[in-house]
Image (cartoon, rainbow, N blue to C red; front, side):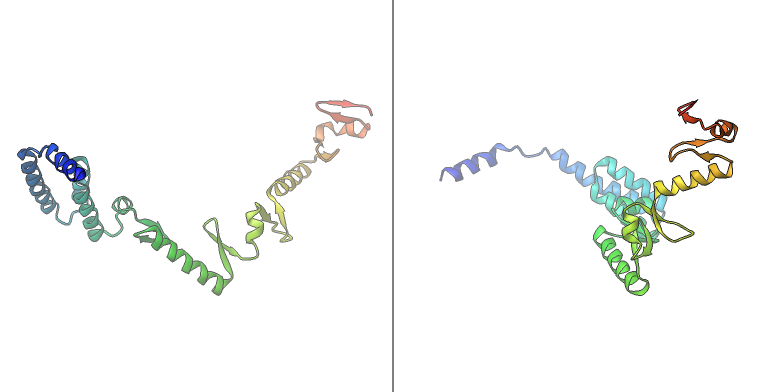
Amino acid sequence: MIASVFLSFTASAVPAPPPATFLQEAEAPDEYQSRFDTAGDDPAALWDLHKWCKEQGKIMQARECLKKIVEVDPDHADARKALGHHFYDDKWFKSYYELSEYKRAEEKRMLEEHGLVRFNEEWVPVDDEPYLRMGMVKEEESGAWITKRELETRAMEAKYRDEGWVQQTDLVWVPPDEQENWGKKLWKCGDEWLDQ
C-alpha cells in the first residue's frame, strides 16, 4: 500500500510539458519532410540535409537521409561510413559481422584452392606464415629465411666491399684511404690507429 501511495505521489509530482513543446515537435517533421522532398535524389542535397538533421538532433531523420543517399549512390563513402558500413575488397558490408563472415569464407577458399593464408592483408603460402610472423624475410638467392637485421647487415657489407673497404673485425670496417694503417698491422680503435 505504501508503494502505491508513493507511486501515485511521484507520478503527480512530475509536471506535464508545456503545450508549446508539442507544437514545435509537430512542426519539425513538416519542415524536415519539406526539405527531404526538395532534396529528391540528389546525394549532395541529401548529405546537407543529413548534416542539418544532426544539428537539430533529429537522429532518425538523419539516418533516413543516409539510407536514401546509399539507395541513390551505393558508393557514397561518407554516407556508408556514417551508417557504420565497412569497405573491403571493393565491396561495402553493412556490419562487421557481415565482413567477418565474408573474410572467413574467403580465407577458407584461398587455403583450400591455393594453399594461401592471409598475413597483413596479403596472401602468402601457408608454410611462409610462421617465418613472417617472426619478422623474417626470404633471401632471394638461396630462398632461406633470415632476420631483417641480417639482411641489412649483408647489404651493408656488400656495399662496403664494392667501395673497397676491408673488414678488420666483425664490427670494424676500414675505408680505402686508411688501409695503409691496416697494412702496418695497426688496429683501429675508435678514430685512432694503435699498435697491438
